[in-house]
Length: 316
Ligand code: FAQ
Image 1 (cartoon, rainbow, N blue to C red):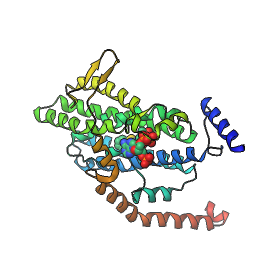
Image 2 (cartoon, helix red, strand yellow):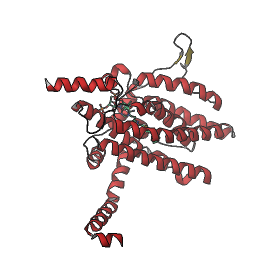
Image 3 (tube, rainbow, N blue to C red):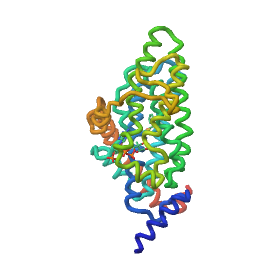
Image 4 (tube, helix red, strand yellow):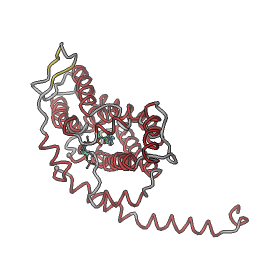
């Protein structure tokens, strides 16, 4: 059968590490899985700007404000590269926005938590961007070409984000008693949601097996989570702080840190729309979309006007 041979050839290319490009034949399920994952990723970058934007006007120094603005701006750029990568699979940007605004599309659970103090900017950089990098560096080798190429630049920028967060926390950890308390409190609040970012455990993850076979994912959710926990358990020592997990303990036999039970009930509630800030985040995105209508209309009208000009007028 034609379909069977196409499918077999496709898998062969994947096994040989040959990138799949937009015009190549691909199984419909591969295309749909990529649209789902890439658009969810793009939405996460855009919604992810909101918790940090909350602190731009309250950054404690000009240097910190400049860093935070640059970081938030980077996230917008990441969203745009990713929307462009998803568009090569035959979905329009408007459709993706519709899916976000109607609540049909997901975005990362992490951005449904509030940013209560300045130290949260450090914890987001260290832990949230740290988890993002752990997940995204392998995506530079994902099987779909446009997604893999977008991830290369994104990862370079995420690395700066992670370092600025750690440096911010290091600064607080060397400060006065109130600053140290603020630092520990932010780590306590962001730790568990950060390790939930990797998604459900492998046995509860409906997509992992097929995505690993197609090399969309290069590691499973649990593998990446474990790597992240191992790294953070060491880094936290430099801060002189602790991770809020009494069961965190080096396991000589496994060569990894053991860790406590994750509250999966909380995870499913948050991705089901019932996290502390889900409604607020969606309302803010929808408002920005509605209030930006005149900019989109003006840009489209300008493009039409330019197109209608004669070549001589265009030069002038
Ligand atoms: N949040 O079968 P799996 C950032 C859903 S980084 C919400 O394991 P999959 C940078 C999943 O969609 C954050 N939903 O799914 C930044 C699926 O639902 P569906 C974004 C989650 O796709 C930092 C169901 O659960 N990064 O933004 C989550 O194989 C600071 C079953 O799960 C990416 O998106 C979750 N945490 O694995 C920006 C990376 N976990 O659609 C601003 C790319 C799972 O079937 C500031 N994505 N779900 O109804 C991935 O690597 C994968 O999609 C996973 C999930 C690992 C997230």
